[in-house]
Length: 83
Image: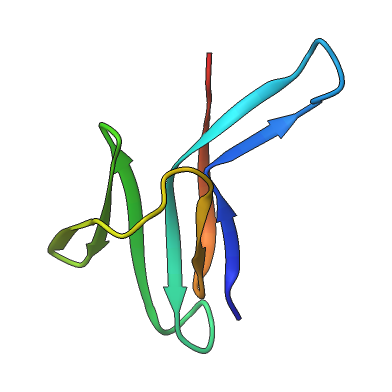
């Protein structure tokens, strides 16, 4: 099933210790189990998103950068703390 992956995660929104994290990449898995199937990655670099699939790296040009995107194979999400 599709999982929504937000570009921004916020913690403690109602406190002075609020932190904001921005999605910088994700690992996706396609297959029946973690010991088989295929892994790919999506990474953000200089504001652009790229799909890394083995030796092929393609820019993703259809992502709405305002909120996030849907993934059927989201496995590991990588967020960085924003200053």
